[in-house]
Length: 125
Image (cartoon, rainbow, N blue to C red):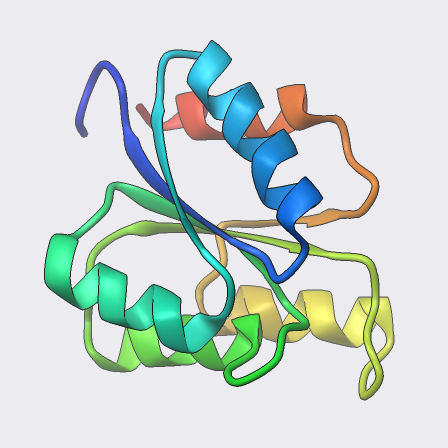
């Protein structure tokens, strides 16, 4: 497993959430990049590669569940963490279960302590 700073793609349609998570990742020594939705994220992942992604589950154009599914179907090797505050179609429990089934390592419910995300990233580093 890679040691040291990780390149991490933060995917969320809310700018304040992206900035908050990115700041916490930067403070922990990681290198965050950003995408506003799953479609943009998938293009960045295919073009650049990342060590991990942190993705919201509910976004326009392509949501996080579809993004996780695409990553796994393409057999892209990276760690996936999901975040959600709930959404229009599924309960938090259902969304969490689906995200984990499709390959999210951990799902965080908003609002969450970003220190927990930093710890999760370090667990297998």
